[in-house]
Amino acid sequence: MGCAQSSHEADVDPVATMTVLVDRVVPLPVIQVANNNNDDDDEPVRAPVRRRRSTLTNYTIQAYSIDINGVVMYHVDTPSGAIINKRYNDFKAFHNEIQLIVNVPQMPQAGFLTAWWKRRDAAMIEFRRERFQQILNAAPRDRVQLFLQGDDACHVALHDETKPRIMAREQSPIDLTHVHMDHNRSGAIELVVGRADLHVHHDGTMFVIHWTGDSDSHLILRDGRLFRPIQIHIHAPSEHTVMGRHHPLCMHIVHKSADGHLAVVCVFFDDAHEENAFADQWWPALATVQPHEPPVVLPNISFAALGLGGSHESYYCYDGSLTTPPYTEGVAWVIVETPRPISRAQIQAFARGIPDLVNTQPWQVTSTNATSKL
Image (cartoon, rainbow, N blue to C red; front, side, top):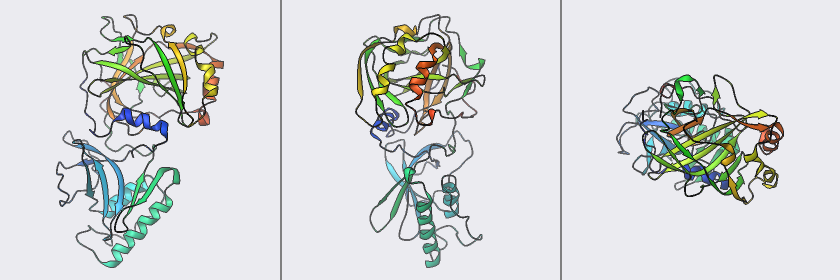
């Protein structure tokens, strides 16, 4: 019942990306394109392909630029680790992609902007450069990284978590149903959480807790893969739903294997009349954690009160993705079925540290993760 772990871009470390979020480094953009398996920069590359084909490789666009000839380039990370430049052969295709992110005027009449190698007249080049500048001016400042690089070429990286994820295959979160259930009767999924210091940081969106557990803390999936905990973060309300229902709170325990793959254990919390003993150890200290300030160290926090793990535990399991940029796929999700109780006061204490009282990624409807199991 093991799930095949899809490989992600060699030079995009999802764990490092989650870590640098703490330091306010803008994450990589979400826009993805399909490669034609030809890395020769002199060969034309077509506009982003939206068809689902097993032979396609997803590349992550780092930035766009327009050169002195009016040619739009995009800079991509390749699975081999190289960063290469590709041409947008059709400026209109590029423009339509950008319109998904920023509000810019419609393109002019058909035929004026053709493939770059067919028309290089001054009017076309000038129009492209003016329109590119309009795109920069229209883009929200907090989603744009603008810089100059040689020959007056203008480069821009556009960051938008709300843009549709092109060619998404295994995106998270999803609505969980019985098809994802693993009752773990044989105890094949092994989850052990111990005690260790918590390093709590607020990145402006959520509390990020660096926690590696003790020497016994680990997750073993049915296929035998071993993961160690590296980080915890909390969402209010829960990102995943169960039969369409959100839980008021969820905790994600991010694990990493020796070969760099990720697994996330999700624990739901439900409103109850009792205080949660696990949260009570460190929840009061959240009020002292200020956004973008150095982390607060909370010593020797134990997870024993959550009662996680053991053959009695049932899980929802599927292969999905990170729920933060760059939305890297190939992430094993292990979601504890039984919610843990937590008091309303504790939920409110956590929610006070979240802007707009929500830090939840919406559902992702895809075709492949609806029936996958670990």
